[in-house]
Length: 117
Image (cartoon, rainbow, N blue to C red; front, top):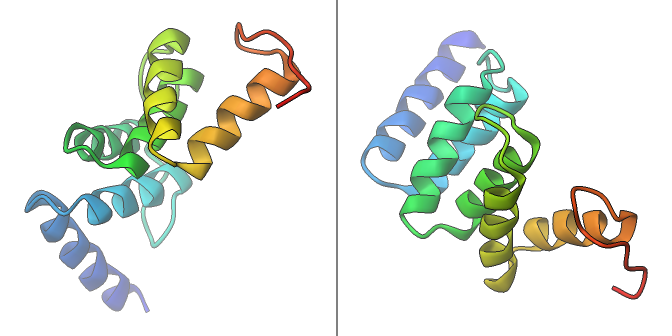
């Protein structure tokens, strides 16, 4: 029901605006994927994950790094993206490890090909 989705979105946004990093990451994903009644909006997705990352949220760092790496919602910056992903991976983000591991295995995005990972 659209009224219920709107209510949940408003609640989630209030939490995010109050500093809840989990809510920020949820909003980022909803905007990135166009879920829960929201239109896909990569700029909003990047803004919310970046806010979460700035508050030391590892999930936010991983999303931010991926978006920088690919240039989604923000100017593409593979160097900055890899740096943010590296920090997130070092703090046990499976998502960041997957992205960096895949790029290394494939030898893409400036990483040397390494099948030993």
